[in-house]
Length: 489
Image 1 (tube, rainbow, N blue to C red):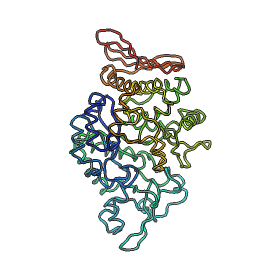
Image 2 (cartoon, rainbow, N blue to C red; image 1 turned 180 degrees about the vertical axis):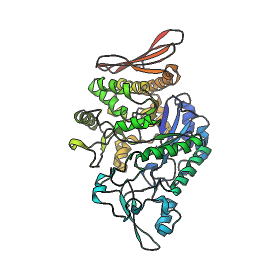
Image 3 (cartoon, one colour; image 1 turned 90 degrees about the vertical axis):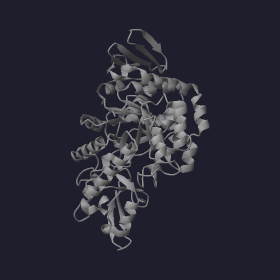
Image 4 (cartoon, rainbow, N blue to C red; image 1 turned 60 degrees about the vertical axis):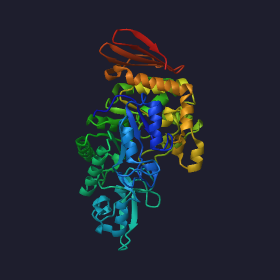
């Protein structure tokens, strides 16, 4: 089934109402004709960390959230997307625990990357370690003492050492791992899943003398393989990669769906700086086979996604504005990033708070997102125009919790009554139903103080104009009869 060119919702399984059953009830009651593109349910699986992104397995749903039957029930009305963490699995998983007990005698041993698989003597040269793209300090290696033998094994853990990482890297070159991935994809298909997001896929290839991140051409060979498997089960694949924007261009050129991780920060810069020049230039060349977001469970991307799009000074200005409005930062930490002592991987902040609670600016940001090429996704906090949740940060000591508020049913209903959310819902319905968005996209000429975007299909045309002085969006559309109407989001 092809991906629908309509707006999707992103949510945790427990963030709208507390569990999957309540989520389905809310969707059917308030959003059945809104998020017609489908629903991305962030990891609902049993997990030992990272709010679901350290899965123990995929054939169960965490009992706190519900069951696979609840997800199949949601799938009766909405196309469902889930995550497959192709790079790693939980330290607490039965697979890794068996390896910890039995070492290389374990049937699961070949799932994991002992360092002798990469360097024959198991000792990586310092020059090779220095090249590795890190998202945590030091190195990506953990030491494991095998319980039955006392033997010490060093294994690859991209997201930290054993003391503080719950994510153990999988060896995607091994037959055991590939068989496991095939098994999970087949299972997803049986559960009527439509799209699988390949989380952290950029890390899967480990090769001496490289960054061990988006290693070419091996990364394309792996994505080709897993895409072919997914397609054989009727599943679409969405690789998730945070890197320089040109990497998305390469992935798109290979025919894969990609994320437009440039768009969130570039729209924010445009509205704060009151200039459309860089956004206009980018929209003319950005991939068309993409998914667009403004906010997500992690944050607003800055580095490396915006490197080469915004200058360091422009990026600093945007980051500083968000910090003044209550945001915090997820930093790069890798020596390969952070030019000029600027270290900002993602801004942890709700998009509504980043725009200082300005309803018009927020609707303008969503209108630009919906007019940009691609399939729009709206994160649940953004769907309800949520503000920064500092209490959650203080309680969890997790900076990203600022944009992960769990809404009760009453809070959802209260948010739906606010003018900004009512306007957003109306805009989403317009985006879903206007068939001009299935045609051709054009960035119309304008001065830097304005932005004009156009979609045209046959005799139907739709034009968005944003005056950056006021941040008021205006949409003019012409239907198949030639009648022209004006719509103010």
